[in-house]
Length: 427
Image (cartoon, one colour):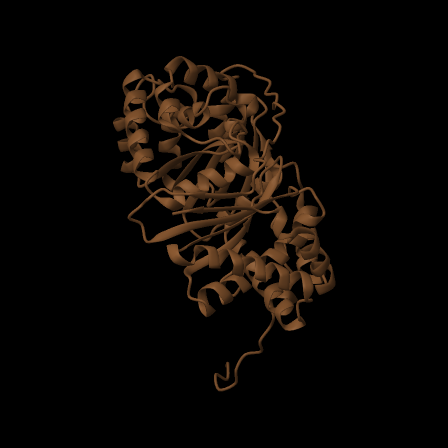
């Protein structure tokens, strides 16, 4: 029997052996790869279909996101309402998303309902209608949402900082506009769909409690034909064209009491050896609630409710972005404090107590992210879609556990030079 008068031994997160559960891979008859993580914890299932159909591949602004959204809004047999009702009937969710590189459709459902939902999923993926009525409704709703969001300083700041970093014509810096929504045509949406949502460009990721006939069922609905034909996707080469100027001030809301602050710079992508090291340095700097930016600018100065620093993980190039909302009268002071913390990291080596705290936080976060099949398949998906394997995962773990304070000091001297950062305030 456990003696509850004796406290259990405290074990640091860095002392745990972090392992990434391997996946099973199957191949449908037409060649579609299926990556599977099985779990018996709950009677639920997640299936994600991924296509190279992000904004990187579009020839007209918003074509990728509009195509992705409208695939679910009506098929050759059923209306958007009927599709949504058939999914809701089983308490399921069918979510879509479109980012820079990929377009995805994700089904969350009870395992027992999977078979009943497959015909609806097949219709959405293989037979979207792209009706004029649904496009008009989409345009109206999105323009209304954009008009509302353009009144928000944080929304405007996010749009502009990406544009300054990558250029307004680059997929990472391109933004929506009323004119772009108005220019959308059903013919263009269908053409984009036919080119990118094809059987040979599809990858499927499944996690959770699996039905007995998972692969045969997937094969029946998605593996027996070469649906939408065979298309070769060539990723175009697009140059980054950052703004020449580095300091910007934008007046957006004369009645607002807060301003949006963004401080950002380019950074090598995840394939560069400095990337995993920067994840550690960025955590110390502004990557968690106990970070230096939070301790100074929130806890000590009281300028903001929260401030954080994020390392983008884009495919072509990355960036570091410090973002916060602060009182209009202290936005400039906030920027000065950010640079002050950069200079401290450049001039002083991080002490071992803080190093140990951050190591434990980062390893603990990874352990939490691997708690369950849904989280594990997401980790594998990110590796597979970026042409990486488990060695990349374990190398990152090793970096967190072994990187020295001196290595972080060198990194700070290289990347925390204030003159290299773009600076934006929207008030």
